[in-house]
Length: 343
Image 1 (tube, rainbow, N blue to C red):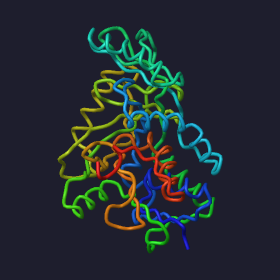
Image 2: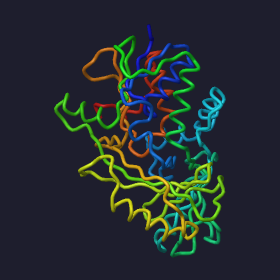
Image 3: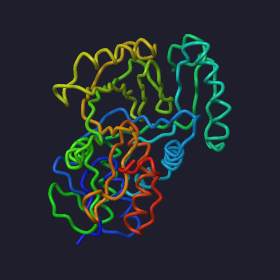
Image 4: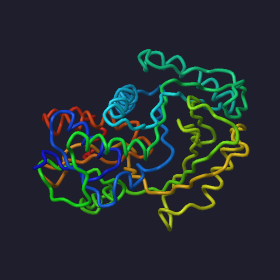
């Protein structure tokens, strides 16, 4: 009999199951669609921080998670011998005008304090081989941003759970404590159950490119014109993503992705001539507040919720796994108030 049943084999469900197992619990992960079948099986994998200003519990939580990501993913890889694609390679952002340049320099100073000296945010020149076009001749370079290969990271987590004796099943009854980490569909179901809008699905589209020129596996990710450009360890580069509140087909790609790819190639000259080798579309769980929902299930005693990782799921996962395991196994509640369903 399992101590913990996790429903949902996306990044939140798998991370929580593995963390519970690491602390001695027996776990079952249940997902009829398989590992990383939803938004966690995408291609982008940008683990990017919030701006270092207007500090709040959400930003502090994400900082802790990003700083703990290295040891977290290293342990998964050590357990399985599988690559997750994690690398803290930093990020470059274009700076559009003089106002944005002044703002970037102010954030450079605040990052020294808010990021605790563990990462930097700096304004640099744009004379980089791998860089976006920047109207001011300057870029923001932060050393906190990281990247991961989403589908491979989920596969590695699933393998780590199995190595530790856990099970991944398409169907199983609720055994022990139950965690609902069922993504976009789960948010939609919860909204209907509670009779109010908690959140729901938002479509995203992304692409994987093979550049015509070699891009170093250690190259920083780029943010330009609201597009993330993420070099992966295998030489591919991911482009993402759209945010679509209305859509007809949740898994089809269309002209919106074509436009996104064109913008990325225009903004990053090193991508000229790149070949599109994969196109991806799927639904991501967005709460009304855009913050994750964590904690006790509002209507089911002994059940818990971990959902709403819209765009920040992989970046938040190590810390979410830790605090949810504290709550599930030890009754220790360290969840920020802004992440509770009643908020």
